[in-house]
Amino acid sequence: MSEQTRGASKGFRVHIGIFGRRNVGKSSLLNAITRQQVAIVSDIAGTTTDPVEKPMELLPLGPVLFVDTAGVDDVGALGGMRVAKTRKILARTDVGVVVTDGAWTQFEEELIAELNSRDIPAIVVFNKVDAAIPDVDLEVEIEQRGARVIRTVATTGQGIGDLRVALIAAAPREAVDQQVILRDLVGEGETCVMVVPIDKEAPKGRVKMLQVQCLRDLLDGDTISVVVKESKLLDAIENQHTPPKLVVTDAAVFDLAARITPPEILLTSFSVLFSRLKGDLHEQALGALAIRTLKPGDEVLIAESCTHHPVEDDIGRVKIPHWLQQHVGGDLKFTTVQGSDFPEDVSRYKLVIHCGGCMMNRRQMLDRVAQCRRQNVPITNYGVLIAAVHGQLERALEPFPEVLAEYRTAAEQSDVEVCA
Image (cartoon, rainbow, N blue to C red):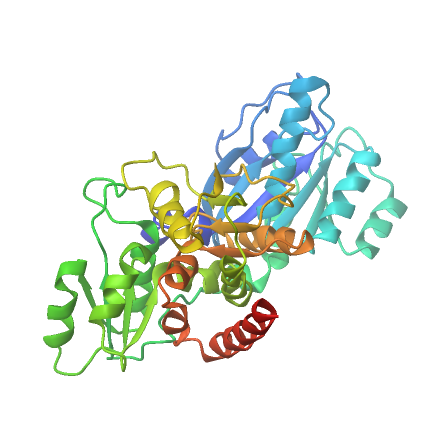
């Protein structure tokens, strides 16, 4: 595995979900593709109880993450929980592999329908063809519905090469192409100053993942990168022979960075950049307008993609609630979820506030944004919200003129509605 692939986070990998009924050979298929004993294989149905993830490099596709899921036909209360976990994987799946042992049942039909409804490219694998040959007419019908059909015998490796080729062909281009975070905002040879506070949540000797990813993106763009703590931001700006093109700050110190950074220098936050990269900056900027209508007692959902251990002054549990309640002028009811525990029903919340999503892929974040949109619940993210409560959101959106213009129009309309 290359150094580049080893360092790629889950959020920058193509997610390939392997779905199917119990005991159709999903785990054997994953082991055959990866050429490793990644998943436990057994003749006993239901051996895979939780999703099994395997990162690897699938050339020429690049870094991928295979996810082997529990059987969608699992039974009983515990089985229902396993199926629910499996269905959550669909939210972040870039390519769906539906495995069957030759039979075609309602479970396969439902999986294909679900993948189609989410616009997820699908591959149907008829495994164990040494024991049962699939019906040719059925294969033709499946391909007419947009799915590629592959025949395999996972235990012998038959058809695995064809499956790799199909996976490479099916991967969406937006999931494969190198993702630009901010180097389109800073030209070659221009300077970007990154403000990186060393907070208590950052593991010792490391900084946050999204900050590392931004630095790598700047290096790829042949820019001049300057990394400082907030206490050295003014020195970093004044010591440059030519003023920096852009200052990017951690959202937690955005207000301080805004006071220090001259107005002629563009300023934004890591979370705003990741709103554009992973989610929908238009939607999340407009979502921040919801703070104008929040009232004491309203419910707010805070969602984080990682499962870090909360510490003193935690940004999602302490700082954001404090700033938001100051803005509202009273107590709000906050619910915090982590990882994949994003509720299906968010309708009771007046606002959803999401982290930057550095550990999520774009499809999963967009799935959450779309879920909120369907339920008419505004969604924003940490950096956008923090800039808004400090009256600095327009400043944070200046690097993105189209989003800024849309936000200003919506804000003016909101002012009219509030006055009315």
